[in-house]
Image 1 (cartoon, rainbow, N blue to C red):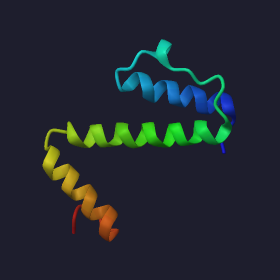
Image 2 (cartoon, rainbow, N blue to C red; image 1 turned 90 degrees about the horizontal axis):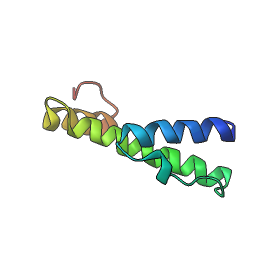
Image 3 (spheres, rainbow, N blue to C red; image 1 turned 180 degrees about the vertical axis):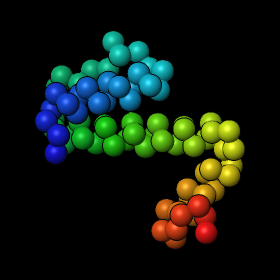
Image 4 (spheres, helix red, strand yellow; image 1 turned 120 degrees about the horizontal axis):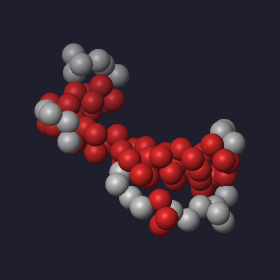
Length: 76
């Protein structure tokens, strides 16, 4: 597990990359487990948005779903 300061910085970076205001991010009273969970969820949201708003959104999303589901590359 990363140290708390690094997790908070990573959360902040992903939060900002999603267009969110870093001043509205309140992490002070969060436990290590909560911070880890927040980071995982934000990364999943960012990844999903990146797929959905790619140049070929349906194709990229379908390939990724096939890869994850069947552990294959490029949907093959």
